[in-house]
Amino acid sequence: MVGTAAAWSNWAGNQRSTAALTVRPRTVEEVAEAVRHAADAGRTIRAVGSGHSFTGTAVADGHRLDLADLDTGVTVDPARRLVTVPAGMTLHTLNDLLAGHGLALPNLGDIDAQTIAGALNTGTHGTGGKLGCLSTFVTALTLVTGTGEVLRCSADEHREVFAAARVGLGAVGVLVEVTLRCVDAFVLRAHERPAALAAVLDDLPGLVERHDHAEFYWFPYTDRVQVKANDRVPADDRPLPRWRGWLDDEFLSNTVFAGACRLGRAVPALAPGISAISARALTERTYTGRSDRVFCTPRRVRFVEMEYALPRVALPTALAELRKIVDRLPFKVLFPVEVRFSAADDIWLSHGYGRDSAYVAIHQYVGTPYEPYFRAFEEVATELGGRPHWGKLHWRTAESLATAYPKFADFLTVRNRLDPDHRFTNPYLEQVLGT
Image (cartoon, rainbow, N blue to C red; front, side):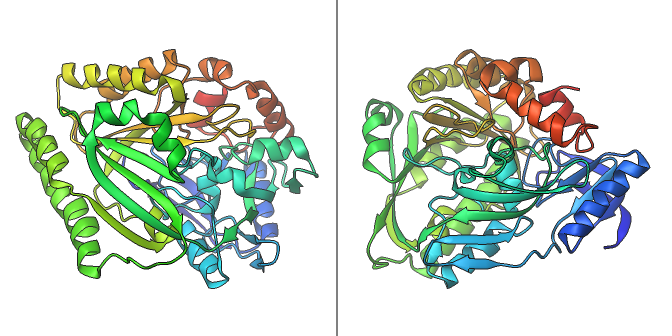
């Protein structure tokens, strides 16, 4: 375990900090030692993952914990479909590990660069009307508390901690080991098609119900969307040719799209035309593949993002208001709007706590204005009962979030018990949890 001072920035480049000390522990005891050392020094300490959150959740001005070298061992139980892994492992590494044992996670988001701890702490989710966020797959976890205690919890052991720590914002402890419920490895058939926004909204309950995983992207300044539906199939009998995968997912979705964003940033008046061309350029395609490789795609175009979980019935109203916002902005929007779905769960600070949700994610290309756009949509989403994604930009405070989460006070009680001196705090946590 080596300690150094180091500068850090997240993937999008909108969050930066310089910690007084960066520590790379190799064992759980070294994590506990690092927490106790921060306490002795009178400093805060934050664990850092892959930097894929847009908020300041990983900003560490005191001590920084880099868990990339943490080795708690790996245990795979194929018969029970359980895997126990270090929390600092990336989802990409986990997916390959599971595939080697004939297993997979039931659902994933669209990137796999996050660490497991980072994904769980922020409520990372995929899409699927009958599936919750990734934290719903956790059956047990081990964390180091703010006093340096090592605590293992599950639905049967320290149940309140388990309810809080599965989406814990890194505020109740440092996740060091996680046990996840898996499923047998499966193949997905992806069907992507252009459609009219009105037609998709008219058939929204059917779209979500018919498919294992459904989502769509609305192109600003148009009435067009791209719909993607992923469904389980018995065989990988229609793999995407390598050249087509490169053309669609690397060249068009990254290289060409990056060029279009740069052009739109330089000449904003071209943005509506670029959006219209993008909407028409995406054609229908169907292919099959290993589940994680269909769920996850490369994202090389840098952006900032806000995402809100809304009651599903509020989605049409939210999109209608969003279209009005986009049309009256003093600048142009260069990114499509992503819409996904999840099922209700019982995790205290999960965006899906107690209700089925529709997620609306808005983005802007790096270097372009975004705050008026994001704030305007946040006002609409808040009025509709929306909950902001913990890893995406927002301006909500503890006062307003307390009314959005029925178990907010219970979470704070657990947090104060496990971290009485708020050793894990930072400016973002002070914003969303209070001081």
